Length: 242
Figure (spheres, helix red, strand yellow):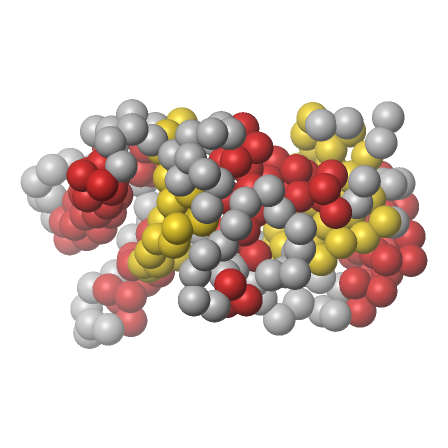
């Protein structure tokens, strides 16, 4: 059975998932992007293929290592994908958004799909039933919002994220959580409803590490999948690393 390592280097974390066949066998958060870390990972899993999605200035040497020991593909605007990108500058579309779009097309072909990625930033990505990436939006993520209140004020603290959020805050921490978490939920619901005015029927796919905090407060029907970006990377790898 063929095995594939799918690397997702985001602004907050560097993650990798091992696929055996088309199923995730294990997912790991990497401590860094050093050559030694990647070498150790390759020795441990012995993958046949690898694919890298990166939105950061990662250690370029690891690409040489991956290419030498696996059939390697780096995700970019030149990657072969199962959708079109009729936007002004396709080369500016983030690798993470390409992977999420690929996952939507792979699992829900022939449907309108809205994919919401919740990482350092929140990305709204709309793919129509003709498999065209129409575009979307980008806004600050949950941790960014929580930290910004502390950074731009003299006395507000950095509050730890939680899903247990009251509508009416009763102290500073709960006031912040109410404003930020419930505010984000209203933002997401608002985007969904705005898109519904143009596209009546579509799937809403929610992914990213902050699902646990936001999903309980959303009123719209969603499909929550924390591994969606890995599944998209695997689908792209199968096209580009047959």
